[in-house]
Amino acid sequence: MNFDWSYFSGFVKIFWQFSWPQWMIFSLLSNLLLCIFSIGLYQFIETTCRKKQLQKQNHPITASDFYLTLLTVFCNSGVMLLGAYLWKNNWIILDQNFSVLSVALETITLILLMDLFMYFFHYAAHFPLVYKMLHGKHHEHVSTNFLSLFVLHPFETIGFGVMILGLLMAYDFSMVSIGLYLLINLIWGTIGHLNREFFPASFDRLFVGTTRFHNQHHLDESKNFGFYTSIWDRIFGTYRP
Image (cartoon, rainbow, N blue to C red):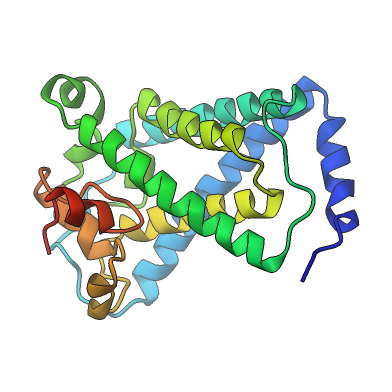
């Protein structure tokens, strides 16, 4: 089944005609709304889920958490602006002929490749010097709260953005595949930083990076570096059940 590109071409033309001030406003507002969506999703699950907490208490929310969250939003906005620049200069090309099957395959490909890249990126972030300078702040959240996903050093946020932009330059993904991947990434990151197990226990055997899987990483920083799956941890010997 092929999509009719005409349904999407209007949106693409609007974005193509954006001035740079419009792009700046759009990128900032959209990333701010995505952050608010993540916080709302976290709070909704926390208040409606009846499963036992993974740890006794959520990590206390500090002023530093809010500052770093805002900084992450600004960094993500900068990455989006860079993506727009690469697109408008034909470094990134959006596939205009896609089907349900191609969207599904491309989205799965993005998930698996980014999971691999993020595994090595995350593993490197735990090298002593890098950890002290960059990643240690995130691990102050031994337990988690609704801002934990966004408590990152700017270099970590930009590093993630550079990885996804590199993939988009290497292959012509469709706009729908990219959008689906980014939505899954946000939702998965939010669920991964809950203080309640969201997935059934059986999902651990399906190589899924569950909430409990990532929570174990916050408890034992030498294990479980994957994000969406436990595949790479199992392959490289860093998996903790």
